[in-house]
Image (cartoon, rainbow, N blue to C red; front, side, top):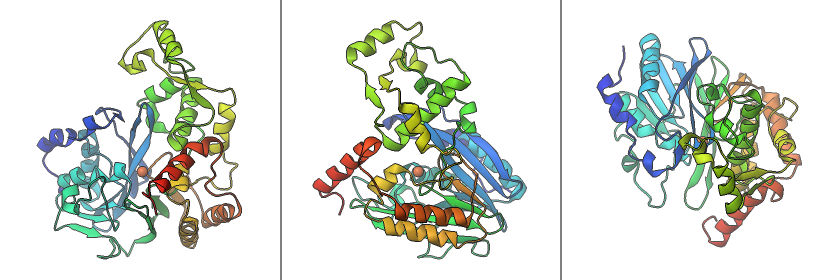
Length: 391
Ligand SMILES: [Fe+2]
């Protein structure tokens, strides 16, 4: 039994009216990787998204629940994704629930309307205090279907016999709120998180096997170098993408002069859209890899996951206790075995001890620093304060 629209709607769903407005990689050629994480119970659909080849995985998790499926953290429902999802629905039951568990994450919010149209019988669950910028719009204008959209906690919780829901926030950001709700599947011990915890693996996630271009682009020292698919270039590219995605302007990179940039591009054997016409403006200092390795999970950190710096410095900078309380509430859930977050790598084996240990570590160390690679994030925060954008 499948409750999705007929296949003829696929092409319509692919034509995102907004994507040409945003310089988002992969520019409408999005591929989806379906992975079965726990046989017959948990699956992930992964895609790449980003800007200027700074592309990181974004992930929707599919859970088997009583009578059908639940989708957590929507991703764009391309034709390829819908084929995979319909195949799961044929085997395991219809899509019953679509969950947008964040009030602020635009990349998770944008796909909800199209996914809801593809599964017109599913209930859409959203975290409270959804918001839009620059104009506050009502939920129906954001594409959330009237009549079958419910707010988590306010209107109840889906599949409570199997799932535990643990809220983080809401935290007042001035323009709106940060409000995220983690989901724990008691059957498999999976902890589903949208943005508030990530595992940044030491090697590139598998999705890059389908499309290594972002890794090869950033693995080079100059634009004139060829984007040759080697393990070394892929690894360097991954580490640099991690630094860009987390800090925007890592301390160990500087921008080439225009003369250097264009002279180098003219020396290239190939100049095409794939290598951005041989223009690569970033120059990395010799120490860059050491700094990246301090940040990436090599198995020797306090915990195999972390809060992304952009959230630590811009969202939780004055709300550390909210975050600690949430970690400790999760740590009490003794069934947790693995973390599946909506970005970077998953699944990651974890335990309550990991969550408590990370909370202790945060409590004992500097929070939201302003030095080194954190400097740009700190400047953004200070600017928002000066403009009275954040309270
Ligand atoms: Fe996100």
